[in-house]
Length: 87
Image 1 (cartoon, helix red, strand yellow):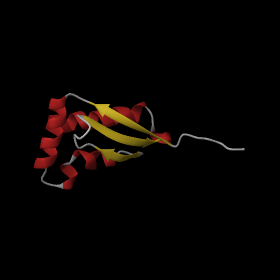
Image 2: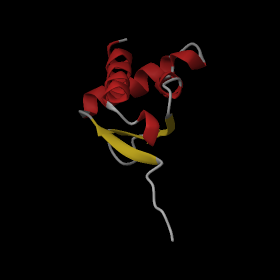
Image 3: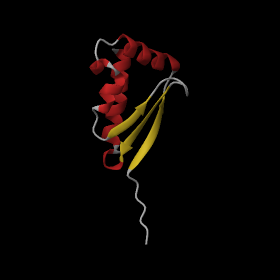
Image 4: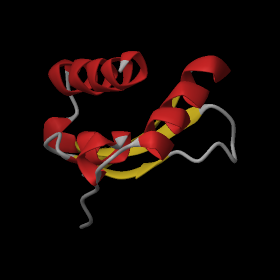
C-alpha cells in the first residue's frame, strides 16, 4: 500500500510591476546580504526555494514546508515583502 502526503507547497506571489521594481532596486542598492529580500525571506521558518528575477513577470516564487504552511507564515511573508518595498 502506498501513502501520499503533502510535504510542501509552492506559491507564486503576484504584485504590481512598480512594487516588484522597487524590490529589485532595493536589492541592487543593498549594502549587505542581510538587506536583500531573499535573505530576509530565508530567515522565515519553513520557507525555501525563493526566486524572483522578473523573467516571468512581477512575481515571487517560494515553497513552504507543510508544517509551516499556515496563516501566520503567510502573514509574515507578506509583511516582510511589504516592509522591504517600503524600505
